[in-house]
Length: 250
Image (cartoon, rainbow, N blue to C red; front, side, top):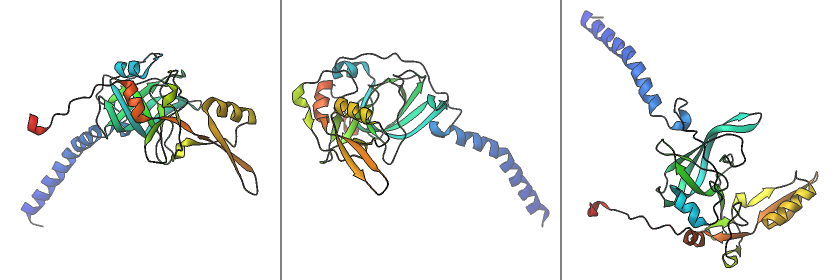
């Protein structure tokens, strides 16, 4: 090998060794929060509020949307969630966000109102969410039940808010209707439940009990069959339309 070629090879090798640490640092800083353990999440506690109306909840929230769970990352203590994040994608924005925005909802603690989302099974569950901004952009706080009111797809492909609600909000009876859902999350496998528990849940949530069986055992399922169409809920929230500014107006 010629001396000049050898010198160039050594110079390039030295540059790569120097550049590698800075490249690694740059890559780590560009990771999404769920893949970056050094990201400083905000765990400021948020106290639950017993909203009496959807309008009051919407006025309090910085973000109102239908969002779908795409991932969760929770630390557990004795099989209980203790802190971590739920990651959701905005499907229908109503306030403070745009469609397809990523919502990072940070939660910590063991109280019943702490906002932990269910793990994603097949397609993630959809929820009507009312959230408050944290000190970090794109990160939010919420509390149950208003951080996760269940949204289900109907047999016509529309969104409906499952009824009865988990929140204690009085809804005009004429808004509640019988709905045939076409959503995997509208059916609950209650095979392992006791007969008493199945009956209590069926009465509390107005579900239909169905049975199936094979050579080995019987299977029991509860299916939700009531709801409120989301366009009716939208009116109850009374959110003022946010102006859309196009490039031609600027």
